[in-house]
Length: 396
Image (cartoon, rainbow, N blue to C red; front, top):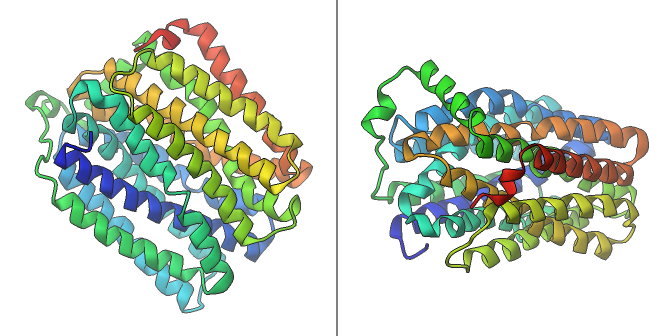
């Protein structure tokens, strides 16, 4: 995959964009916890991401089929870069208030919602079809693997210096992202038929296409388990670090890094395979692993026990996500890929709802119980869809 110059540049940009995202997320969650001491507020700050994510994401998918993906990426990345710069100034100047976290979270969610459907739909245009699973696995490795280093670094910045430097570093990373994006030679100009209809008509066509296809609809709904519901555990990690382990920001960063290490292990394993069959079955196994390990989180009371469990969750999530995405692209014509990603990303756009629910429940019963609840729900959704659409596990 990386022998393709343009894909290599896209992947490099993904690494730096993901690194910036994780640094901001760690800083935001820890600052919120320190300011409020409330798991509910922690969930609420993350919940506001859902508003721009739901509405902007689907239209970004439509635009990805109608406009040069390179141009759209540059615009969305410029927006995020500006928000990181503003937040670095606010935090370092000492003027940070809780409302800044709410507004900046919404603004960054808007940028991500516009950027990610375009980036995801760009990759299939830059690699041959038989390398697609590997390319998507490398994308997932870049996104999740960034958690190996940067959450730990951010934890140290928070403990030793000032969380504002996390935002400043994210801004610098986005300067690099813009440079490598503008170096891509293939802009992936849209096909003529992709621009034939209206925006609204294209949006409706995208939903009809996905929901009218048995395999695609099954793969889509299965994501509500290992992606939407299961990701709620991430909001519990700072609560777990403080309330269960009695530790601080350093432990929080290291626990997030464990999940990233698992993502690298799973992503590189899939990327090293030249020709992967039975993507649907790999997704089923990966998602099941995620649910079972979350359920086991109820019993974890030591740092290293939870660290190892999170490594396993990272492996399972990247296996599920990469394989599910590859199977969906395999059943989608090229002129519909942007809209497919826009519809598919609604499952990720609703993750803040899971964050809010996890935070509210943790306030009442504690983080370990919520790990178990999330695990059971994730398994119930994925296997319920499997019984409803058994062909999803047979998809290549």
